[in-house]
Length: 152
Image (cartoon, rainbow, N blue to C red):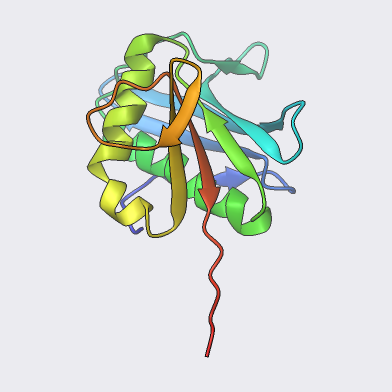
């Protein structure tokens, strides 16, 4: 999927990424982290503003920098990079608020046609997982990179 996005600075193992959001509120450092969970091959995708004091993710602050499409496209670019390096992993994501989870769902829905050629996408509703369907109010998401089998 080719979308305009911000330039990324990646950590050595491609589990941490940084970029700068640019908009009416100025330059805002952002941080994305893929963190292992207690489940084998399941990583949590965490994203938000980079707190200048703690150097950690602040996923509660609302930047409203007018560049949400670029920001989400940049997060998706890290998902491609991470799953290129770790193709057998599952990536779990949910918003820190219902509104953010809704924003993620809207982003997935908008680019679902392109994304489903590269990823298996699942949504969680009432503690059950199902293949992602547009228009469903999911609580969380899991994606897995599709592995291509070229048979002759």
